[in-house]
Amino acid sequence: MIELHYWPTPNGHKITIFLEETGTPYRIIPVNIGKGDQFKPEFLKIGPNNRMPAIIDTAPADGGKPISVFESGAILEYLGEKTGRFFPSDLRARNEVRQWLFWQMGGLGPMAGQNHHFAIYAPEKLPYAINRYVNETNRLYGVLNKRLADREFVAGDYSIADMASYPWTVGHKNQGQNLDDFPHLKRWFETIQNRPAVIRAYEKGKDVNSTQAPMSEEAKKVLFGQTAAVVR
Ligand SMILES: N[C@@H](CCC(=O)N[C@@H](CS)C(=O)NCC(=O)O)C(=O)O
Image 1 (spheres, helix red, strand yellow):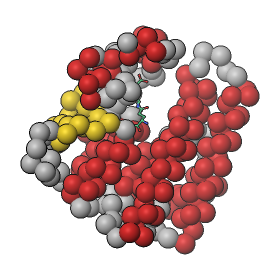
Image 2: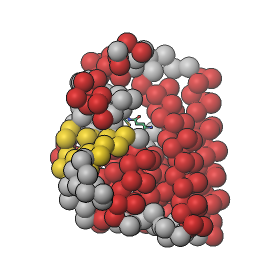
Image 3: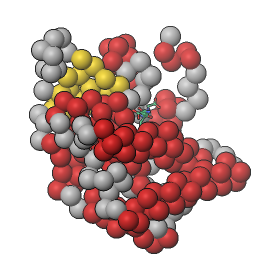
């Protein structure tokens, strides 16, 4: 059984997509990041970066005590290895998947995250910051589009690399991007969007947080302006 410490955000959706795709038994423990659950000492024990998602595998492959994992990329690799699905064991295939997973973790996710921050949440609309991240997101969409020009998925067969990137393209409109400018990415996006497991994963998200309202002022206070004090 996998205990998933989760809130329905792009990084959270990555893991429910994997779990739904593989039919792995899991239990969601909500981490309401707008209310500060990510700072609770019990969460920090498994998620020392005060960010969700994190998992606890209560039945690891070695038969030993439970294993916890934080960082969505590490979680996807861990679950891919555990289940033998969506993270190929062949040297070359695995190398492809890993590169594109890290590309998402170090590029698309953080840049699109800053894009959301400056374009939507920042109290001041700073044109320099907005342009920088809209342009950088645009560049990354271009990289992904080019990659998808001659293949169905990012790294060969459908894999954890696709599961990592897809949730970060769901908010393309808010990121100032038009999918019509990226036809290969658009085809890939629509293919993944229509997968039954992906639909179920997003439904799970709505069960955990049905609020579609814009982020509250209270949540903004919790989420923005954090310093080292939050993990002391
Ligand atoms: N690199 C981390 C990033 C996780 C992350 O940024 N999670 C956000 C939600 S998408 C979060 O928990 N935010 C809580 C906070 O900012 O305090 C991962 O991929 O797991």
